[in-house]
Image 1: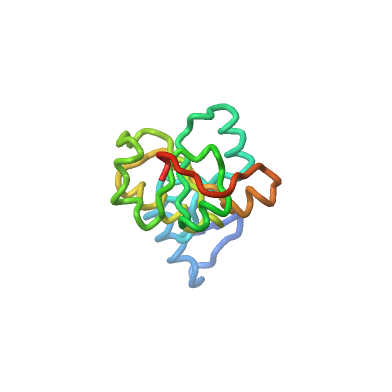
Image 2: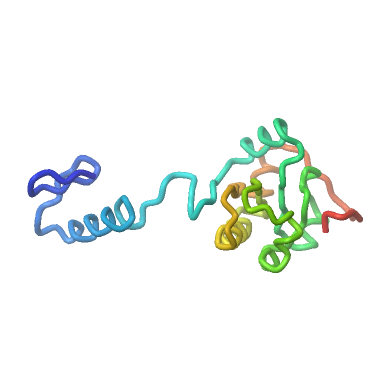
Length: 160
């Protein structure tokens, strides 16, 4: 968006002074750095949206990265990634945040069934001061649809 003399432009198109979008566009630009409702691609409140391929690449480069599964216990037992370091249901993330180490500068990757609950968990962690958050778009559904490996069945270890 650019403002030159008395002409306001959005995506290269001039908005007339009488356009109902002119005031909203100008206000959004002044307050938020862009038209209202627009967000930078891939980010929201410090949360980066990543694909399952990007997660797989990150796991290959760093098998010890902190991947947190925020699904229900039944979903966890039905299928899961072996790379998951913690299983914390999304609605418990705030009360169990200490289990992730306590360092708000540590990168945290979050996954759920479809990406919605992990996005909520990521927003919660962002509100608690975490700065490097990655939400897996499409979640386990996308992971399985991509043909990537999963495990299933009971798992008794310290990830729960």
